[in-house]
Amino acid sequence: MKVLKRSPGKFDIWHPDKRKELIHLDFCPFLSLPGVKSGLLLHFQAKPRGMREWGVYSIEEDCYYSRSHSQIEFIGELQQQLLGLDELRFKSNPTALCHFPNATLIFSPIENNNAIAIAPITIKEEIKSQWKPQSLSLN
Image (cartoon, rainbow, N blue to C red; front, top):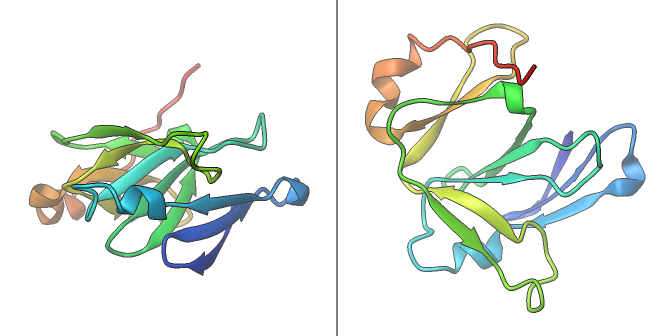
């Protein structure tokens, strides 16, 4: 997926082969909820069907990352909170996601590998240099 930052908490994403299926992402409604001031927001993208990926928004960095299911790993014990918006009031995407309040991203140290790990902030430095992505598959 291609990602274009529009403003804080707002991004446009699209698949290079499906430019007409542009998705406008707005995380601002979630950022106004109590307790959603830090950490990561994880959601499954609305489209394009058959090419959807997982999206991770880093609140502190105000950055968005798009990855396939096989490029995201979870390390350690993570707190999580499922959040949803009233789709009749909010016309933006996403409308449901998982909030990891005390988590951070670790990026693959392997060249040309886009894998990321979602890990607790407390153990980030301990595992950052040791983490190597696993080969995940749903086959």
